Image (cartoon, rainbow, N blue to C red; front, side, top):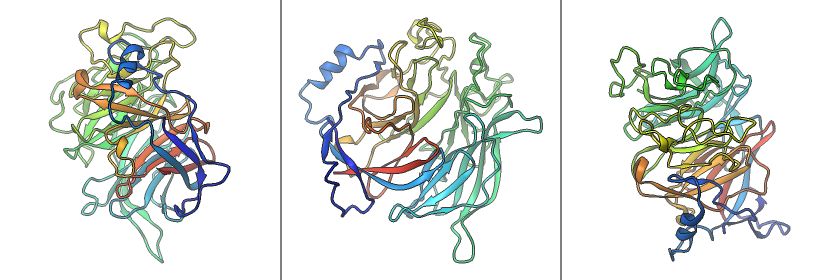
Length: 424
């Protein structure tokens, strides 16, 4: 099983603290269901004992604190060829953090945000051609004049400043506003990821619509709630989106039938967009996103109704008109409320290459998932031993440092650290 040491300073030359040592994690993995039946049971056991040379379970790692004192950090993004890290905080702050010494510098020009409930300043992404186009993208909850709110996407050009000027997002403006505005402070979704084709994918939650039937907002393609949006870098609906030109559908929608996806990552081997999505009670999902796919919420779900052991809807596999998750946590499992995911492709941990890492909030650990196969029907996902399970951390978001391959983690708390996972 993966082993870790106690926290150590960011200086990797420092010796491990004598009280830390290398201690084995005590919480087993395989907490979720396989995509086909919802029970990891026999299949997971067969895979673990099939004689494979290395499933990454014996990797030894240490945890280094980079910086402390963040207020509910939500997004992480490395500046290409710079080594520094952009960090968002939900109350409305954006900082540049230098991992070498932990210094942090506030970035000016950040928009006013609706910091209430689950809203605020949320994700951050950099333009895929950042060296030539220094735009930085933010997602955030914003309000209209009537006080209703929705998910916004905005961008500005990052000026790193100097001796006489602080870093700033120059010319920041909202480039896409998900419609409609609602009187709700939750389920904004709001992960933002550039796909391999240069399109910007953004998740939007269902805003906690409790009309659990076919008229639910997530099943209504005329609105941009409960959906994955696919945009150009300028914020326009991509011309190749599946519902472009349909009179009763938003041109920006790429997939729909989602509840509240708060994790999204590109799988390097296939270029596919993967998401992790919150269920109602349990029913959390990992999905491979297909163009035009309906992911079922709430007419198909693996969740229970809140406060009960009753299934909320038929399983995805009982309907032929929805896309089933490749992995899920069925009703009664305890769930995996997700936030933040990344496929590991670094050099620091060769045994983890190709694995999906995803944070979980209420369950308070960092999940690792081995993935084989491709597509929404052929991908096989197995949860491995949890990381950071002894910390009591709500894991909010992850990033892989491009040069070192270290895995960076931001914790969701009012006074939170940003840490990195490094070889022990």
